[in-house]
Amino acid sequence: MIAGSAILPGWGALIRRDGAFSRRSGDVGAIEGIPFCSCQDTDPDYRILKTAVKPLGSNGAMVSVLLHNGTDQRFTIELVRQQGTWRIADVHAPDVPSLLTLLEREVPREEASLTASAKRRR
Image (cartoon, rainbow, N blue to C red; front, side, top):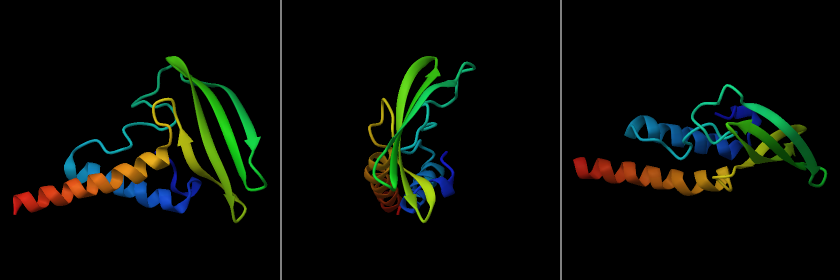
């Protein structure tokens, strides 16, 4: 999971809501694994091979990370600086083009399915 203080504030609420869906439904939420490896568990040979940082103006940066977790994979992390602190704005993985977009799309669907299930049980 991504630590709360390292992410933009809106993310925290989405992550908590996704976790609440998983606990209440018993299903896997939108975040199915570790965002920085697109996996449930890391391989024994998990390692960062290369990083590169590209500034995006004075308050942004794009960090490219090449890591090895069974195979080589490239992830991109968008950072923004808010009140002097760098925070994650989004994570782009080979199988998830935008973690933030995934959460924004799936969390309302998850909550709607819980509401529909509760109505059917009444």
